[in-house]
Amino acid sequence: MLRKVREADDLAAIHAILSDPQAMAFWSTVPHENEDQTRAWLCAMAATQPDEGDDFIIEYQGRAVGKAGFFRFPDIGYIIDPALWGQGLVSEALTPIIDRAFAVHRLAQITADVDPRNTASVRLLEKLGFAETHRAERTWLIGGAWCDSIYFALTDQDWAARTA
Ligand SMILES: CC(C)(COP(=O)(O)OP(=O)(O)OC[C@H]1O[C@@H](n2cnc3c(N)ncnc32)[C@H](O)[C@@H]1OP(=O)(O)O)[C@@H](O)C(=O)NCCC(=O)NCCS
Image (cartoon, rainbow, N blue to C red; front, side):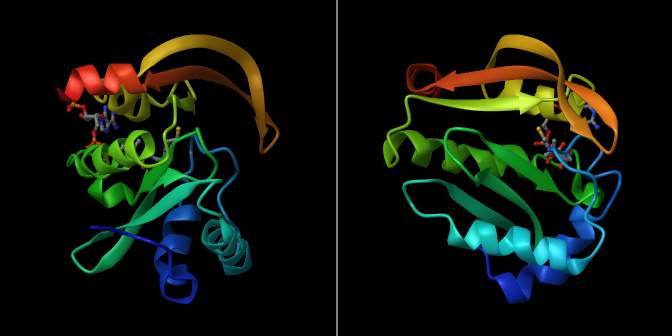
C-alpha cells in the first residue's frame, strides 16, 4: 500500500533502509549516518507542497519498507528494503504513481537519473516504458567518488499508448 509519510512513525524503518550501504549503493548521497539525517529527509518529504512533488511511503505487511514518487517533479525516485528486492513491489507501487502524475498533476513527462551500474533500476524503468534520452559522465560526486548518469524519460503519450 502507498501512503503519505508520518515522520515520527516512519523514522526507524526508513532510517534502517537509508543507512544500509547495499540499498544506498547508487543513491545520490552516501548512507545516512544517524537518525537526525533521516528525520530531516522525512520532514522535507512531508513539507513538499502538492505543486512541487508527490511522494509516498511503501507499506508492506504493516511496515514501512521504502518510498516511491516525486520529491520534486518531474524526477521520479524510489528505494525499497533489500530484503524485498526482485518481488515486483516497486513496479507495482510506481504504476498508480505514474498514472496520477499524468492524470492529476498533468506532467508532460517523467524523468529519471540512474547510475549505469544500477541494473535493477535501469531494468525497472525499461519495464515501465521509460526510454533512455542521453548519458553523461561524472555527474555526481558521492563520498569522494564520481558517478555517471543515464537519463530516462516517459511521456504522457508513451504511457497512454502503453496502458490503452
Ligand atoms: C531499484 C529498486 C527500487 C528495484 O525494486 P524491486 O522491487 O526489486 O523491483 P522489481 O521487483 O519491481 O523489479 C523490476 C525489474 O528489475 C529487475 N531486478 C530487480 N532486482 C535486480 C537486480 N538486483 N539485478 C538485475 N535486475 C533486477 C527485476 O527482475 C525486474 O525485471 P523483470 O520483471 O524483467 O524480471 C531496488 O533495487 C532498490 O531499492 N534499489 C536501491 C535504491 C535505488 O537504487 N533506487 C534507484 C535510484 S535511481
